Image (cartoon, rainbow, N blue to C red):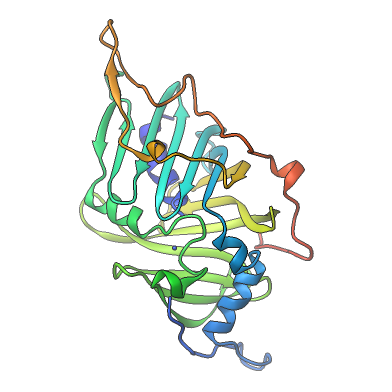
Length: 301
């Protein structure tokens, strides 16, 4: 599988984001209801606490991409996030490297072409809108009021056999997303965001958050699955290592630079060959992240 095929959905995941409404929700005959403010409060506590997340300024992941159709297994990726809204995604497949960066205002894509020469292109309007809406590191639900995100409780659903509160989140841009919070663990297990295809048609991308583990006091999903309703293979990002609050200079999120060598081959001077390099401080979940006490997590698909 080439980078050009795998990176669009992989980045959507990654790209992982509110005044309160008092709509009650409860399963009929099953105890007291919770309003949206209480649900968000309990969710923040389940994820490690609001104050702890507010202190996180940068986060870096390294891992690999999988596909449910069996293609693209083990393709490595690196994903870097920096507040307020800077991201960098690197992936290597078939000895080709692709990069997507967003500096908070503009984004660029560096990718190989059919002739083997990499090129840099700006984000499309749709990609720029999605990047600005991403609200990196902790997403739209956590600390929503401070982010200017309006959240309403729509009801109680079942997601993969588990009861989950369905929240509607209206972002400052006007985009509406939906987030499902597990009614038992109070961890986010799913969200949907609208996207437009090349023909301008609207559709929803569903992202499932799985395999939560504790890392530096934070609850983080180590498996993120992205799919489009109606079929097609599902992209799965599996996080192998994480680093929190490591130095990530703003230059990492600037437009990728190109230069031409004496032989006329164009290369990206900001990327250390042959692949992405992990920042210092990255640790593996096997030694630093353990399942939260009593955490069951969402049922497998």
